[in-house]
Length: 122
Image (cartoon, rainbow, N blue to C red):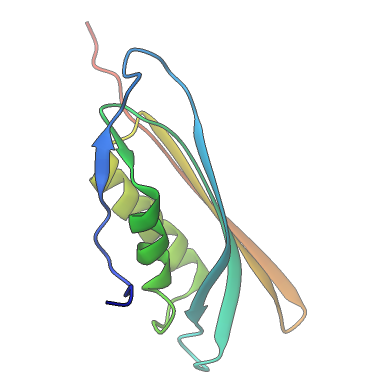
C-alpha cells in the first residue's frame, strides 16, 4: 500500500530524559498553497527542540508536513500551526519552528515561532 499524507504525529519515549539535548530537523521540501491565488508556496522548515518525555517519530513528521501540500495557508499561520501541533504531540521543554519560504513576487519570507515550557515554582 502506498504511503499517504497524515496529520497524525507519532512519538516514542525519550531515551535520555534526564538530560537537555537538542534535536534538529531540516525539511527542505515543504509545500502548501497560497490561500489567495491557489499557487504553490515552497519552503524549508527547520525544527529544533529539547524533548521532555517524548520524541517525534520521523516518518510521521514527514507525512504530517506532506499533508499541507494541497491546503491553502498563509506563511504565518502554517508555521504557527506546525509548532502548535508538535507541542501537542511531544510536550517539549523548548521548541522553535522556522518556515523559510521561497521568494514569491520578489519577497522571501521567514517566519519563526518558538515555545518554552514554563517551569513550576518551588
